[in-house]
Image (cartoon, rainbow, N blue to C red; front, side, top):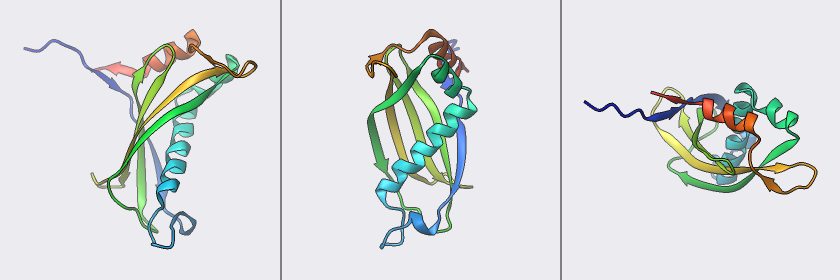
Length: 145
C-alpha cells in the first residue's frame, strides 16, 4: 500500500474561441498568438485565484524569465480552446506554471508550456523573494491528493 501523498495543483480553465484576427495567411493560429493566449489565461488565473491583489498589496510584480513551449497541433478559425493553468513548482524565488491548450471537448493538446516567473520590487525593479503572503497563497493552491 502506497501512503505517499502526491502534490496536485488546482487546475484553472479559461476558454477561448479562435477569431479571424488570430489566424495567419496559412489559416491557422500563428505560434506567436499562443503566447498571447497563454498570457491572457495566466492573468485570469492570477485574478481568479486571488493572487493579483496580493501582488499589489506587497508592491511587487511578476516577470516571466523563461517559457518552454511545445507545439503539438494546430488551431483554426472557429475552434473552441480550453487553456489549463496550474502551478508545477513553487519556490521562494521562482515559480513555474504548467499551461496546456486543448481543443474543447477533446483530449487533443495543441500547445503546452512551462512558464517560469519571479517577483520583483516595483520600486527597485530588482528580483526579490516572494512575500510570505504570496508564497503561502501559492502553496495553498498546490493541494495534496
